[in-house]
Image 1 (cartoon, rainbow, N blue to C red):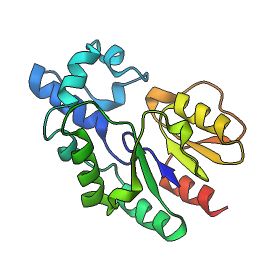
Image 2 (image 1 turned 90 degrees about the vertical axis):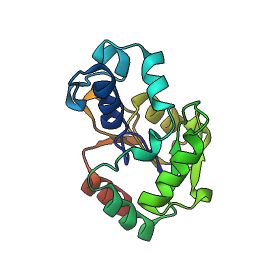
Image 3 (image 1 turned 180 degrees about the horizontal axis):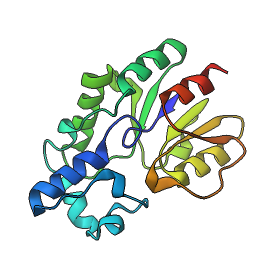
Length: 178
């Protein structure tokens, strides 16, 4: 079982927008993000957003998404669970992300994979919120199942036959239990 972190078990978008709102005295909300490109969704430069995410302490302060802690505990009883996360370039990111996953979900560092190209990692399932990642991974592993975590910014498009959209942890647990 392979899990993406940001947007699936971690509220990256909420944390990033909180940093923007504090820095720029704005009131951006995660529910207003209607496309994958966060910068375009809010009229912000990606370099600016990346600089916020790469600051020391940013990753460590992010919050788990509702229901994720309990769901990961349930998945751990059914499968060998790995977190496959795309890291930022900041000097603190890898350490903070690995520590965050240990603190919030009890992931051992051997079950945390920092990877930009997730299609290279085989598993029975991948849960991710990026449609492009889901499609690439599903194509690379046609006998496996890709689950696209539903969000306002990833709607539309066609999924491969071995991929499905899920709307929450009950659907994920049902899919894994099949």
